[in-house]
Length: 492
Image (cartoon, rainbow, N blue to C red; front, side, top):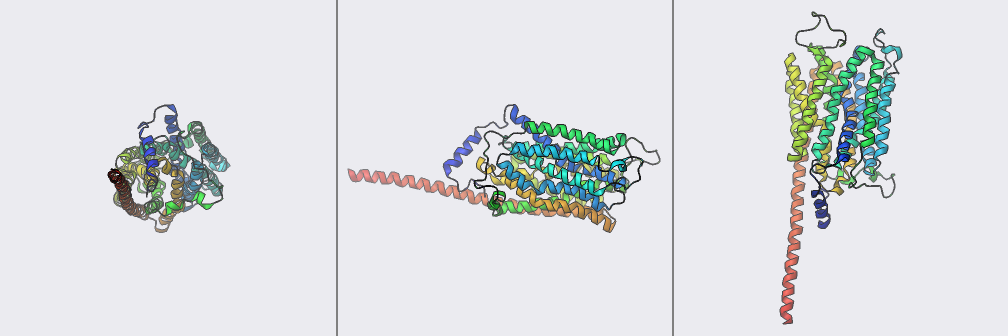
């Protein structure tokens, strides 16, 4: 139930009036610089996770050629897991106002992890070295663990801080921020592939780390919350469990079902992005040759592209989905739009991806799924903001509630791609992965339907409660007037 229900009516009305006086789109330099900075925070968090498919393709062919695809996927899923696992801690710290400290830590860890990745394999990453000589544990430690810990500082911050400025167009602002991951997913795969082809793996990754340093430093300088935002410092220290877990959220059926839907969504979502390059190569739709060494005419099928272009196309199209869904969410509601796009993603995996037999069908799937994936991954924070309600008091809990959802989804993010990799190794077919992704998104859609129904019921009860209070107040006023008239008549 919205946290406005049960509050004193005068407080609710004054809070609502102050929000209504604000501009629909904030004016001035600070909110718009904050929007750009949060864009880059997302650029260097989910954007790098979305780009992992290009690293995985290189690892499978060179550094980790003798490793099971399950273990290769584990590196990327570890990034996603740690990004989400500590979201509840980061979100609560942000609610208390420690935003600069959180972004500073992320700005150190993400570039550091990439730089360390460029040195841990030594000469094993050289072009002339024998395939399969990479150090798996150190790759997992630097790219999976260190970068994942830095990304969690960026991710929750990006959506929570921008929401403090854009009260009326919160979903659109979060959608613009979320498009940072799709733009990143377009830039990083192309950048990594060409730099590795020209400079080698180690130097190419260092140039990539330089881009993260510049963008992270800019974000650190400009990401600041609105001065009107209310912070919630723990009244009795940080040791109490209630500081980190809001029990009221767990008693809210709308929130609980939405949390379940997010868990199942992450369970199957990244199986698509981690697998699409290898799937396309196995079907002959794409080639994995170095971009600096063009294939001979008889080596390249007529209808094919480089594998990294397929992932880049999907990430580029997701920008459209993020922006379109964000605009629609402000008009029709974030939960409703999230449900529609998640259901569309499930249908694309179960129908189009499983039946793709031509190059044109592969491109169509990359374009269409990329578009809906932008909404699927971008709207959870906006959905939670809608569940909380519009008042500043309610929105002060956004970081904590978002963190609780994402931390619950961490284990699913870790194991989902690993399960997908195991299915490929076990059955030797990509059909199992396609069905896995589609079914997980289907279950997520069903949970969202239940969440949407619960929210509609709670709002009806809330409206009835407010109408009851209003009616009771009116009756009291009438009784006072009547009683006053009776008293005056008795006096006469």
